[in-house]
Length: 188
Image (cartoon, rainbow, N blue to C red; front, side):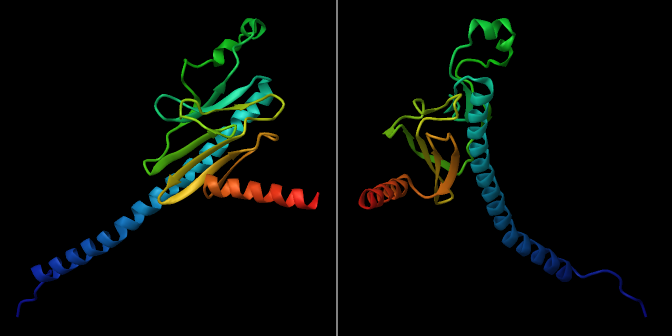
């Protein structure tokens, strides 16, 4: 009596089919997790770059701006031209080419910028240039964007220059500001 070794073609085909079926159910989940992580990373990077612009404005005693470059990346750069004293001290080494930004990040493929607002006015992407000043203040600015069917809002506080990203829309934020002012008027 001979002993049979190995598997039949039916057994091998069944195992391969089960592996393919398992991979087909897991792969979309992995893609969704990667997209979600990229979206979170973009939001954290935008907030970090805005804070860096504020910090550099204070540290260098020069106004900075958070803005988009021609390629649609967001970053920061100095606003003011260098003084002759700064050039004499070798400060020209940190200049970047015209229209470029420092620490540029690319929005994710699922990120869609919806609204650019600066000092309570809707502006274009090219006009959206949020100033951060050496005293720690900033321009009032909002950047509304969507990622994976969720809407987020970058808010720049003009008094403190602080930034935060919240989930919500610009219209919801405007309603909250109005309600707070209305309550203050009634109490005062």
